[in-house]
Amino acid sequence: MFVKKINGPRIVTLPDGQILTVADLPPTTTRWVARRKETVVLAVEHGLVSRDEVLRRYGLSEEELDSWIGAIKRHGRAALKVTSLKNYRQP
Image (cartoon, rainbow, N blue to C red; front, side, top):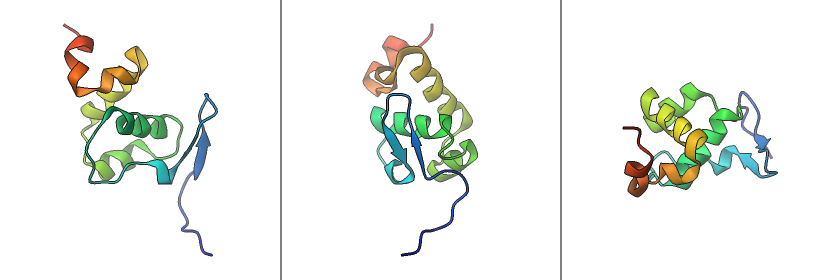
């Protein structure tokens, strides 16, 4: 069996003991739900994929990714839900 060579780690262990792999990343054509956004943010924060790779792969803007990261840091996954945006948005 041959494994495709990639730069960086193939798996990372999150602080809660959960294991995150490259295979856990959502597909490039995806409907963005809170769990998938959180997976992308965790992958970037723990060095599984680079920020530039995520921006390129998913066609995100820097501001959008930064808003996801900020929302998770301030309020957790619930802040990423589209239906809850008005509850967590800064005035």
